[in-house]
Image 1: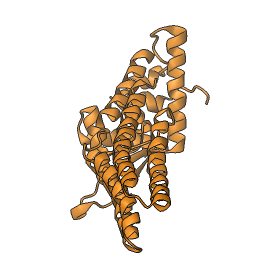
Image 2: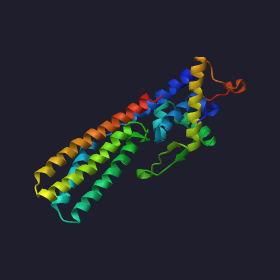
Image 3: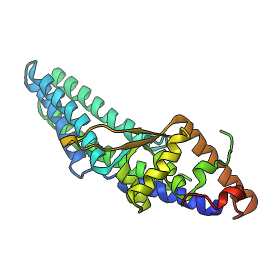
Image 4: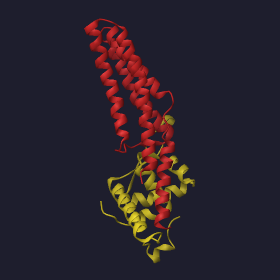
Length: 144
Length: 113
């Protein structure tokens, strides 16, 4: 086997990993709704109910990827390229919208800004989550 | 990272196994078998060689219903060796076109396919 053929085999194996990394279509919408629901629950209900919701969300955030790992047979590795920016965006989206929602509600006492932010959270989580998946697959396919 | 041609890795199936594992944190045995399109026994044979070289580690957590799934991952030594091997292949391509890599003639007939 020539060196060129060997490098072709390496690239084919990386593409095979990328092809296997398929997140279920409902994962990011569900994560977004769970985050948004928790933001609103934090404002609407007294402790400890919001914490119960957060615990359930954390269980889902750990359990669903573990289930997907068993389903696909692959545990993805962080590639350290620009896909990381999408992941940072996803985390920032969750944290910043939570802070903004809480602050606006406490300052103004209004609900509608928090509801708008919750909708934005769902959209942001879907966009950043799917962006991360696509970037990770592209890095796997394109990295020499 | 220095370029170092590694004959243990260079056998076609083992090269693809290492490339697959290098792109993941870990992968299940069946995923590797599907990627190679060969029988379990063939994958096992190559994994044993990589394991003996200290390049691959195995984990066998018991799944639902007592079913054991084997998960494979590259060890740090395996990742270093694979990276060095790929670098050596690139150097070969850049300097000598599509020349044959330096496989020792005595071993050529005994290479696992």
